Length: 256
Length: 256
Image (cartoon, rainbow over all chains, first blue to last red; front, side):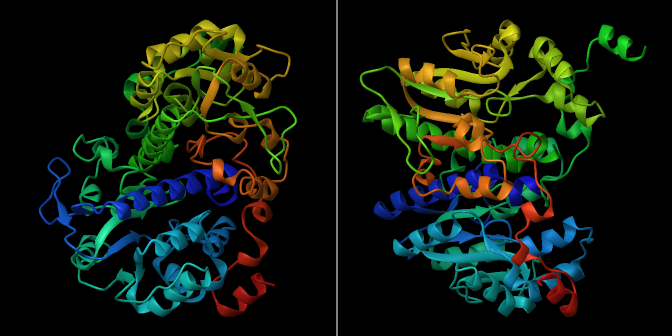
């Protein structure tokens, strides 16, 4: 939390990502690509295919929490000892609109995208029942418009729960999507979250067929606080052949 | 640690940054800039000036730990309960060369830079007395060459301790530096680390005169594990006007 919500370093990493994203989208607006950056139905990470752009209008699709908004209010409550529960989070969705802030650089970036004629669309796992409050949070932070069903898609819009692929498919049927941004791999494709093993998941992002998409249409923002990235025991996180301990002489001295 | 060393998400954020950095340097190699990205003596964050490039050969300058190398060995020992001390870290510098790995995308990026004719230079606060072992760690990970005094600069090379500006000035006297990369603001300029207050430090990176450098010559990689970014109490990290608590009355009280 100190890193993500307080540090200059995290703010820089986030700004850099917005800068690269705006540059990338600008280049694509000048030269219309054949395909959206949204994987087509039946695609795999080894053999990806993308939804064609045709002559559809341009869009960029973003997750909300810790992508365009920092949830200062909820996280400060957690930092002070509050325990996460789905009910508490839902209350936060309904009542926290005044206690969020844009991620560093988000407002300038979304303004720049809209200035290029790119529609900004939010695809979040906040719940459809709280749509009005979520739109208010986004718009109150200066990041709107966010209109449910056109530029705001929510969990509960369909029967696939927290999976975002069906919502992405709906968006890609209407738009040529030039960029996807999020803080978790599920913001890019449900295919990643189907991988359970921590090491396999880390390896999957380097799959030769899709590795070139990072920073080139697919963008992730830093979030070391929560989500499926915060997972794994010693053997998952640290390779077995990269372990180390101080040498015997020093250890013996320490033992007296 | 789960995030930085284990997650796919952190690996993506790191890869994106390398991708943007190589793109940026490539553009500058094609069109030589007037100035290095290294601040000149006497510059401020409000009125920056940069060391002129003249006809000097191109270089890119990187921190080592958690910038080009992940210290899996030392961090796994810490994760298992080992306590950091300067002596333990020095032992790690001397004996850990086999237990590091490149950050995701680092090897391809450094190879690409060298392929463009850009000299890769490491400027780290590892100690000069351990120069040979540090060169071995960098080269063993496939990221070399790293030669003390020409492409490897270390703490102890001069009498300014952990400050890197004097080493940067030496490098900029010999090279037209197209990119600076690190995990902490001290890898960019000592001016940032002269700012003690957490909120002031976060604000400083948005100074209008330098904010355009992020992702455009100045690049930071994610490190939520250690360093001056991991700092601050509640009032430093969470803005006073963005507090929240469940229940309407409590929320109002929390908001003052």
